[in-house]
Image (cartoon, rainbow, N blue to C red):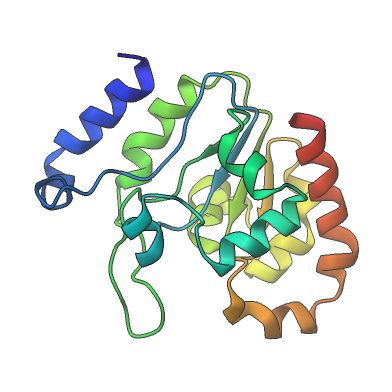
Length: 192
């Protein structure tokens, strides 16, 4: 059993995940000793949980477009790791999905990243990952954090969530497609 399979078994045996394990739901993440890019999003959605495939929805289609990678490369390369802030679907909230559970990333991310020594960039998608990884280094808003992405390089690259719900934000912030996405694609392709 490799180290990542061992960690997966530990995650499934953890009391905080007992209800998922009893229902036969596995944690959704991807880690590899060959990873050079780690993508940290919120948590798997309903469709991802049902198919056991991360970013398997319209948001994932847009994310792959932003990264400049095909679906095949996104899922099949060991160069891209997927570490959501929670590896299980947290359920619905009043608006969208519930937030990732507190303490999950703190417990498992350091352990997994320790086994991926070649990660060059951690792509932080949305406010939960940015709050955890950037902490007090964040700007006053997600928009300003993303606008100032260069401030966090070469370790981190903050992005907005690629959800279809953010179409209005994308229209109001044309600098995102003009300045941020070309820089993102360049970094991704350098590390594939």
